[in-house]
Image (cartoon, rainbow, N blue to C red; front, top):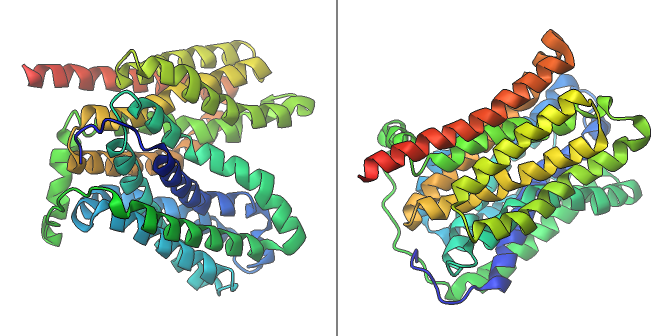
Length: 391
């Protein structure tokens, strides 16, 4: 399956991307209504934060294990099965579960999310010709930003008219539709031989070889630095933007990132290695931070920073199949990427808030600058290691 097909199966790739939107909404459906969740669970208090973090915690703990499981269980079955699990959890949530059971459903949604984000990009890479793979992987990399935008455009009006539980019900129906659609569409896709799932007692030891592989860990290493920054920037920068421009700028930043990924990013990926594109994105992002440091809250600086980060986004996902030629290796690299992404999203905002508290805006900018330069340097170190090992 890892051999390059002659033509790219775009309709199927867009369908798998739609599945990515579905599981990104597992995060987004809570985020967009988080300020109203106390209407459903008035006695939950601070525990409501677990409604968001439990999905990410599963990715932190089991990202690599998910890669091993998908290789063993099968990419097609893992993707479709994860969609069915996600659909069932959303349907249960629409029944207004007791808070404890609601949290359990969120934990299970974390497993559903992992199944799709590991199997999805591996299948997409296998369905592309070599020429189109950069474009397809960049398309996949937009699934989070697009899903949050769609939830803001359509989910919030739905909630305003029919109530909070209607969002869970709508999500369940969408996930069912995707599961049925992909269950049928993927039937004629060649499936690679499944690998044997390792014994449970050997799982901790299996992490070490993957983390030590300069090929498998490279996309995740850069992605950790990226995810520490992106969500946290959207969270802590708004107070520094003029109130009359804040809404426009915050709406434009994710769109600028997506636009750069799908235009300049795709062009660069056809001429340069994906890691080099990600490194360029880190350097330009560092430049954007310096611009913001000199002109706090400047709208153009904010949008330029987000646009530069789009190159990191596309380059990181495209580097998974470029550095790892076998399906099993790609699944493991994808699992570690998911692990790093969840870890970055979890620690990024608290780190930025701490920096602001200790050293103000300059402290925040200094930390962002170090993170972007760190993303560039970690790729440089791993590239040197790959070059040395290939001699």
